[in-house]
Amino acid sequence: MSEQAGLSGELVYRYAPRVTRIVEFGASADAVSRAGRRPRARERASTYISRVLSSDRRLAGTLRGVDYVNFRADGRAELHIHAEITAEDGPKIALLASGLAIPEEGSSVFSAA
Image (cartoon, rainbow, N blue to C red; front, side, top):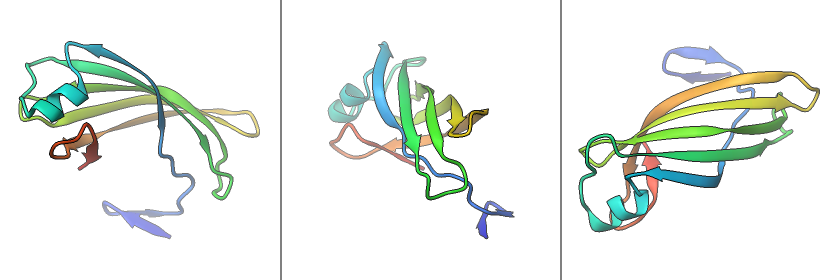
């Protein structure tokens, strides 16, 4: 059993997506974090992701989707992930996730908050 945010249950899958393409709309995570500048309102990027889900969990298959990243004026990034999981045995599962990422000092890397 795994407990997170007051919920309990069995961990079915875990993923760490691989970025396959980035489309920037007035913003670059690299430029924002390296320059230490605060992004202008409404700067965003679409980050295309994919990953093979490990078969060591109950759900194995592939994940493909897009993370619609909105950069905030405080330097953080709001994450809006829309993806689909195609299970090894065929069914498709919708995935929707959101969160907040904080830039690491002097790097283009953002860490989930």
